[in-house]
Length: 286
Image (cartoon, rainbow, N blue to C red; front, side, top):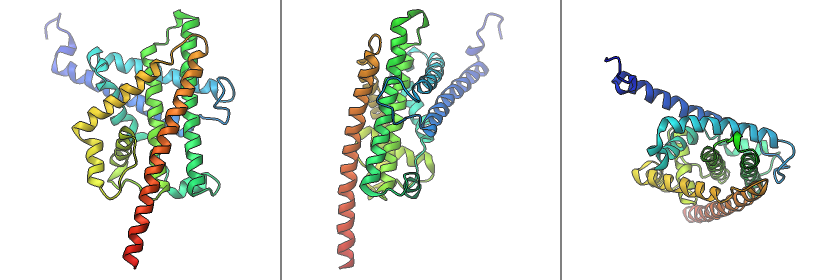
């Protein structure tokens, strides 16, 4: 190799660069999975301050830092086109979204089941995305008040976008488990891909068409749809930027309304499917 040749211009350098990018994206996925598993939402999630608020901001700062590092490695072209955001979510975050089965959900909610349990799952998800929006807005308030601290608005928006999307995918998956209509697939990767497809299209998965479900989730068109959905969500979050705590309040309200509407749509689909399955079972028995 010539003395003035960039190591990254060689096959060995390019390989090392790709490996570093993969490690950085994996770190993002691990952080999001950890946040979801720890369930930082609290009953005080409607307040900008209170129990858990400082911890949420700390975790979000960690994620913002990891995303900033990963985005710089991915390059301007990949980030601007949305490819980096969608690939990070589909390949590193979605497979790590923890989805509990029906029995575990009942046990974790003190014996609640049916619509009462669905209400509880929806409340938790709404509270969590509200808290994420408020934590992100609070970070923006810090930037407005002290510009030298610049926490990176693009990375902050990406962090909020990915966290909200992950919480909503988790909600969709657990609502399907609750209705005994899980995606049947080999391994968590393909199973969660089905729930990711449901999130992209904002509807319940049709358990009678598993091939269609996976095609919607992993096909070329699905990747484009995921990218567009994430970019729309990120654009929505952009509108909540504002000085002091106005961004925190706006971010919380927007996330609460959007997650609630998504939950209502998916629950309606799942109830309709349950009725259809019940009618089909009755016809077979008669």
